[in-house]
Image (cartoon, rainbow, N blue to C red):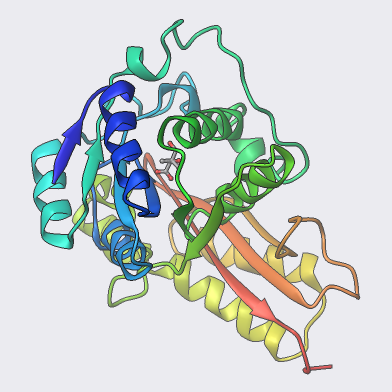
Amino acid sequence: MFQFDTVAELRAWVQGCRQRGERIALVPTMGNLHAGHIKLVTEARALGARVVVSIFVNPTQFGPNEDFERYPRTLDEDCRQLREAGADAVFTPSVAEVYPGGHQVVTRIEVPQVSEGMCGAARPGHFAGVATVVAKLFNMVQPNVALFGCKDYQQLQVIRRLVRDLCFPIEIIGVPTVRETDGLAMSSRNGYLTAEQRAQASMLYQILSETRAAIAGGSREYAALEQVAMARLAGAGFAPEYVCVRDAVLLAVPTAADDELVILAAARLGNTRLIDNLTVSLRHKG
Ligand code: PAF
């Protein structure tokens, strides 16, 4: 597996791949890799493309009081896992390489509508930071396809919209969430949980599953279902931030015509913020 720290080295390698007629798949990450990331790499390999994984903890998507400084950086272990998973190259740029003019004052990409509400409301500027760095990575790597986890559902919809609006010739693939055996969605932030919090954490998935079952069973009282789920989360020891039932593409409040929905939630256990979501299809269910 190659490791590149600079855009110039990476581009030279990508150019060689293209000359040989190879396709490039990009898996953007912030490192501290777990089975969810490795699934992205496995799916990318299955496409028959050369697989580039970027590892970059992006400062512009963290708020001033968030965990940028303490975000786990585990490069050696990440590279070991990537070699084992069969990645072709890892791109590990510095902040100065990604933001040559500094990251405080920078050209930014705002993706309207899908960025608003939920995590966009709780983390002002977060999705502009994500959209900006993802657009930069797309420019640097120029992949044919890029893979993202469905766990960050709002982020995935922001990126789909970004690609459409800016006419990037890149296919975006959302890869289903990988879960622990008790249902907890895999996340780099799970490592912050104490043993007691880890035991509580799977309730987020269980409560989302209950909400999904209620919708699949015919309930259309979405606001009431959201409130019930919020109360259930609080009862299970979380500080709930939101539970929202939305249409699965624009993430707007669903109308009677919407039949592809997503239930999204964010809740804190102590200082650790967990997010998760489940989709629900109402097609052919009346
Ligand atoms: O999901 C992530 O890990 C990050 O938000 C991403 C897409 C790599 C951008 O920094």
